[in-house]
Amino acid sequence: MAPHAGAYTRAELTDLVACAEARGIVIVPEIDLPGHTTAALAAYPELGNTDVSGPHGVSCVWGVHDTFLNLDPATLGFCEDVLAETLAIFPSPWIHIGGDECPTTEWERSAAARARCRAFGIDGVERTQAFVTTRLTDWLRARGRRAVVWDEAADDDLARDVIVMAWRHRRFGLGAAARGHDVVMTPCDATYFDWYQSDAAGEPPAQPGVTTLATAYGYAPRPAEAPREVRERIIGAQGALWGEYLPTTERLDDMAFPHLSALAERAWREQPTTYADFTHRARVQLERLAVLGIRGRTLPGA
Ligand code: ACM
Image (cartoon, rainbow, N blue to C red; front, side):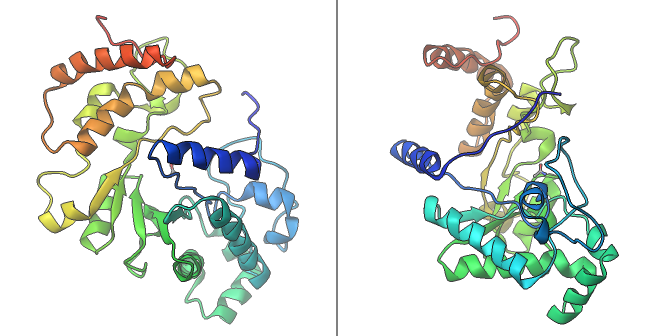
C-alpha cells in the first residue's frame, strides 16, 4: 500500500478557490462529521470517546472506522470552529458536512456518550448522528450557508433545506427528493469513477466494482419515469474520484476521462444520443484534452 499524506495550507486553499472562481467553478468543501474523523482524534485525543477507546494514531488503512467524536459540548464547539475556518476560506453557498458511514457502536459502548445523549434529550443513541447533523446544519443556516449531507443522514427529520447527495443507491436520492430535498445524484454503481473501468485482466488497481464507460453514459441522473416534482428536485450529479487508488495525476486522468464527459452530457442534456454517437465524440474530446496535457483512457478501436 502506498503512503498517503498531505495537507493544504490556508493560502493554498485560497489560491485554489480563486483559480476555480476565475473559471466559473464553485468549490464545495466537505468536512465529514461525525464519522471519518480519525485524523482529528489522532491530533486531538480529547475529542474521542476516551472511556472506551484511544488514544488513536493516524490511521494507516482506509474504510469505515468505528471510532468517533464524543458528544461533549466542547467537541461540538470544535466542529463549529473547523466549519468557521472553512467558511472563511470557501465562499460557497453550500457546505458539505458528510454524515456517511457513521456506525453508532462506540456511542453505545460509551457510558459518557450515553449520559450526554440523555442530557441533550436525544431519544436513543441511534438518534445521535441526526442530533449532530441538525446542530451543524442550523449553525450553517445561521451564517447564510446551506448544508449538504450524504444520504445516510437524510432521515425524515432532516430539515428540508438541506441538500442530499445520494451515493449508496439512486433510490435514496429519489426518496429524499420526494420528501422535499434538493438532491445531487452520485450513485456509486454509475458515477464512482475510482471503480475498475472493466473486468479485463491488466486493469490498474481500483476500488472493487466496475463502472464501464457505457454504464456512466447510460445513467440518467433525472430519470424520465420519476414524477415531475421529484425530477425538478434533482439539481445535479457528481462523479466521484476518491483518491485511495489514484496516487498520481496520470492515474487520475486515466480514470476521470472520458467517464466524466459521459456524466456531464447526461447531467446537462435531457435527451441522450446513442452510446455509439457519444464514443465518436468522446474520441475527439480525448484529443482536445491531450492538447491540454490530460491523458484520458483510450477508447477501444482507437
Ligand atoms: C462515500 O463514498 N462514503 C460517500
